[in-house]
Length: 336
Image (tube, rainbow, N blue to C red; front, side):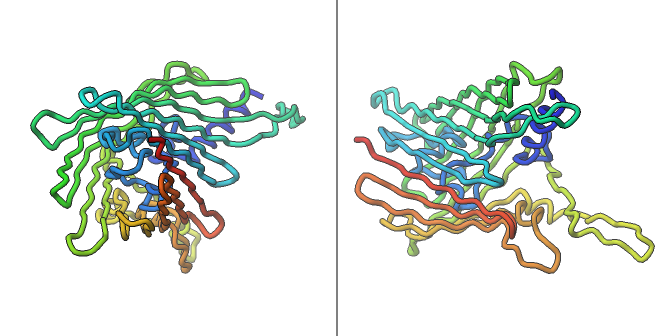
């Protein structure tokens, strides 16, 4: 039974890995924000989304005061992610504190012993709780931020506990059309392990930017992710070539192809309006999930936002494969 549980756990982790299934707690790299998901899933420069500090704590600002967001992601294979974010300004001198929770439910599994005899059902889930704070460096347009998070992963009667942190630097001036940020995510340590092997957290170093056009109501977002590892390419088995003798040649990833896999882009139309339209594209997702001679639209994301007095509703559609899509819903409430 123990071996079966461990196998299921590893399969679940690999399903959500960002760099080849090399770490644990990979659910930390899933976004519950519909706005972020619609812009390609990796955007780091959103200053009006109270969910953004879960990925970039330096975006915490006084406009988030008493903003609450609840989110739901209908992910792949009946896996569901729910999350919530809340921010509160202590006072003008101290600034704003942000808190967030993320819960990923893998559903129910059927347990069996070594002989294949069923022993009942069990659940598996991942959970994290984070607290973040940002500080404006005196006499500058630079902001530094940090998250501290407690992480828990459970499958059947086995569990693992970890601690993590995010560090980030943001450049923002309200009179400039551009924003830049550097984020180091998921620095941490697995305190208790599932088995005898201690695993690494899914560390990411990301660089983000956004640019607002002067005379057109559009903001463009750009993210270069996983800068801690240059070669993130994985050959797509669908692109392998087999000759007449049965010899198989795997796909070769070019230098430019690998660069593009680090990039996600997004565009938001009417960002300050009551109704917003958002589009995004994740190059890595598109490359790794494409099929030969068939247009799959993998990597494409789209969504919209609707403001209604003190409520903001956001929706995102993410295309993964002809057999699987994901929908994200977010409701942001102004409690002031």
